[in-house]
Image 1: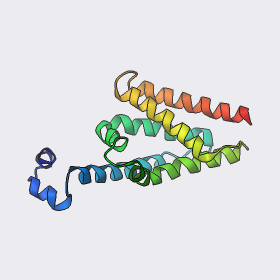
Image 2: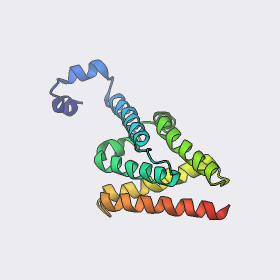
Image 3: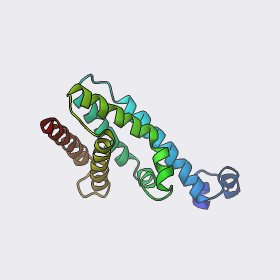
Length: 160
C-alpha cells in the first residue's frame, strides 16, 4: 500500500481512507480492469460480418492483455475468489456470449453457448499468457489468437 501511495504521490493513510487493505484495492482494480476490457471489446465491434467482429474482439482482448500486463495478471489471479471474479467479468462475458450466440444463430450452428465462450476465452487467455511472457510476443499472440478463433469457428461450422 505504501508503494501504491508513493506512485500516486499520496501518503498511505490517504489510500487507507478509501481501501481497507491491499486486497480491497486490488479487487477494485480488477473490477475496473474488466470494465475497461468490456468497453474496449464493445468498441471494436464495427464490422457487420460476425467472423470479423469475433476476430476484432479476440485481437482487442489480446491487445488489452499485452498493454496491461500487471492488471491482466491481477484480473486472472487470486485477488478475487472465483465467484467475485466472475461477477467482475460479467459484462465482458456478456459481450463475448452475445457474439457467440449471434454467430451460432447466423450460421445455424448448435452450440452450448457457455461452453463455447469458455473455450474461446480459455484459448485467448492461453495465447495472451504466451504473448505476455515473451514466448511468442504480443504481435504474434494477436495473429495466433485470430487464427485459433478462425479454426474454432470452422470446426463448429463443420460439426453441424
